Length: 422
Image (cartoon, one colour):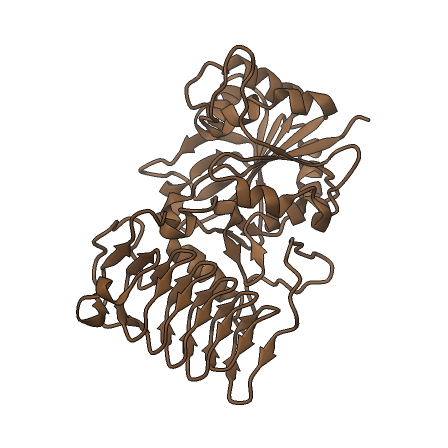
């Protein structure tokens, strides 16, 4: 059965700017908003937009992502024809290679796409937080008679150099495309969401198949544009967040708890679906305080939680206080501990009377490009001993003991990474 449009979801990225959060897991599988994973958003967009055939391209640490997606039941993508298919790199009789660029990854799955022989192919990234009706974008693509439609968004001019930037005429036809220009001439940024007419995409992928690290922004789109393929910008007006840095990841989670959230997880008509474990209901203890927070099922709160996102199965013991923090699934926060602007990955155990996020900011001694915020970032399965004090802009990974903290302290900008724990 021929499909009008199929989606190819690029989910192989490491997301190295998320530091210890992605040392054990691919970026699209990182938790978000208490109970979700980042990849849930584009997958939910697909099914809400009527797209029932999705290829998910995985590469970096794919195990968690694969088990999360499974056969696609939570997103109604368990179909006999179509549905969701996980597409890792593979070997052929002649060669085998890793995906070496966004377009190369798609090229290596030509056979998958040819099975459906679609009229259109939607290319998506697996690491953005947003809601978008791709059907409206397809209607626009058809109405314009486009070969390529690029979803775009106006960004502040000072941020435009981080993106692929398009310049359009009055009909929204793209006249120029610049990939991360140092001096941008437009603030209309590509969102990394493309609709291609299938025949055009297929020809371009085959033609540029020998291009090292073949990429959509750097190679495919400029090639098609030079070839005269009509390329249009589809301006998106809604909420869209690239959670590629610890700062933007923290901000996007914090926006969920605003009085009027910029991004609403509770809309009936556009649900976000996920594959979550079965947990009992949350429990809020007699002396507990919870203000302006998202608290997921199975959490037990005996202490105080302010302006935070609490994942499923988290235990906050008596006398513990959490402020402006993201606590992922199954963490335990010991009695009397206080956490301020912390991000804890899954299964972290924090001892009793621990102070996190104290003192003044200092530059990271580990990686100033990644750890440039006020945050305390703790990798999954880490253990923090009792009675230690941890400064701002710090990172911890692994099972740590009191001996790892001189004078019971990790100063601001410092880090502890235990060998064999990564």
